[in-house]
Image (cartoon, rainbow, N blue to C red):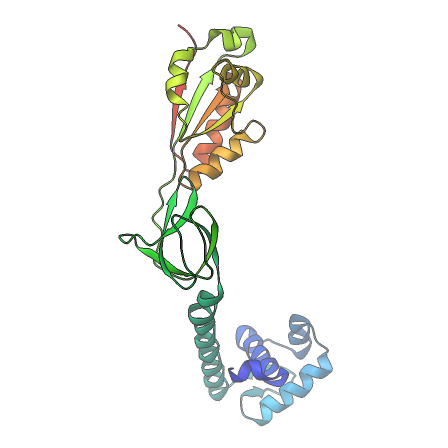
Length: 262
């Protein structure tokens, strides 16, 4: 544990020196007290100690300035904090953080596994050849959720593509005026299917397919794309501009198809 974090006195001295260094030479005890949320009396006692130790000087008019020694102490303490923070992030948090993955095969606790994204989900397996890896924290059978710690490397992930299938509003024929044959070739099982508008919902139902998402289809398409899964959104024509604006705003790729019959 670094000195600055070992006691209230050390941490207070550090914060006061930071305030003085940031606002000198026009800094007063009252301003420091307000910034740190303590009483001016408490700040007064701390500053007396800092002046006595040669870390701060005053011009006699209740104005303060940090000395060369004060700067050196502040820099040394800040460096200690930086090293400690780095230790916590690299050696502590990385060891205790646990990701939830799906076992791609039977796994044992403490086993080295490799991580990859598939259809928007994180999978763990013993198969080599990918960059990210970790260690399982429990046994798991294939298809079961498993915790993975000690993660190293990066998981390759490309955004999914959203296919927007425009169908006419009811005034223009609705589902009766949709090229169902073309749509049936697009809504494959590996893609998330959403519907925007009653006309879109009925169009899918005519093909014997219920949408995976109806309410919230727009946000679902965005989240799926960010997780690497492509989707199809059957969308009534009047909703298309709003959907495209949302996708463009997130920088996502999309394909627009007009399924209205000629």
